[in-house]
Image: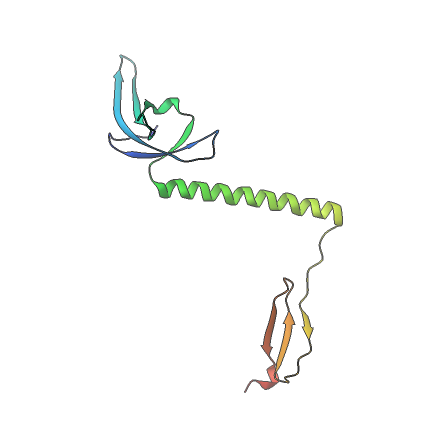
Amino acid sequence: MSSFEVGQILFLLPKKENKIVPVRVVEVVVRKKLNEQSVEYIVEIPNRNRDTTSLSELDAMTFTTDRELRDYMVSNSISAIDRMVETARRHAASAFGEPQPAVASRVAVQEDEYNMITLPDGTVARIRNESSIS
């Protein structure tokens, strides 16, 4: 477990809820026994009553900075999106066969020094002909 200081703000990401909960460490309890030592962090929850509870009782991931939390959430989101896209690609391949690579098509233009091409995503681009480049 990480070490936290009294007064430190932590960011919790509950495992069963889709929200971020900031808490403040208000007490550090150190218990020393003959064969072991334990540390308990008491945190204040920002509700109306300013309830306190042991950090270990909260079923949440703990982050010491908002940046650390954001990076974790972005990484998880990207992984989830990648899995969804891969599942959709496999489903499309099994239902419709492997996709054929798209090829840009040429469109005739009135100007001799430029050609218009349509890219696979529908974007139309104007490119200069090699013969008109001086």
